[in-house]
Length: 226
Image (tube, rainbow, N blue to C red; front, side, top):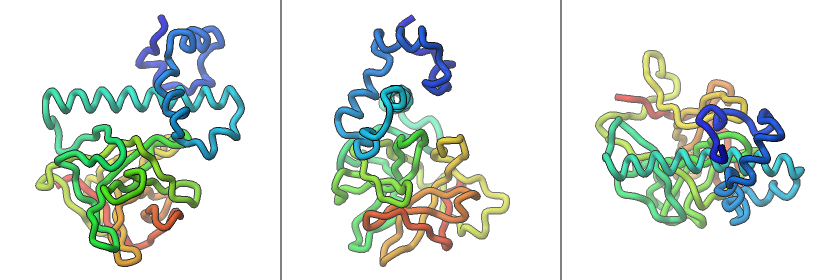
């Protein structure tokens, strides 16, 4: 079998047997991830990795991209089936129905984005005025991404609540760290703008991407189901 099973997609590349890795490589199981990496996705760290780690990155990236394509196709065929959904976006092409997650300092609308990066699915911002279309906070830096997912939601079924008033709320989980720690959708005011980003108890606040850096904010709001 050349294509990965659903069970294999949940595994790290390093957990697969050498024989299975060879089958997947020959059958194109890394093709989508390799194409994204070849197009510059995560390029600034990719060149520092070993060949096996590069394959692991391509494997995880392929699985994310395939799952995102399936979500997008299902939405296009059936419409919204839940209070919110994630669909693929590229560059500054913001789809209709994207939930506004804030405003930049110049008043430009910002939307809620997420992208696979360094083993995790990280939350950030998207906008028609941003260089590559979206950026995420990671490793102390603002990482620009051109291919990402964007949040579509019914504004009547979600709301923002203060980070200190989460008791009894149902926050919207939007991503995860490399170790599986859930990441939730946060929003913080910074430098005359309101920016969407990522929140977890471990982070201790909401982290946003701004000015080339990852900025930690201790005053924030969280998106929850209404």
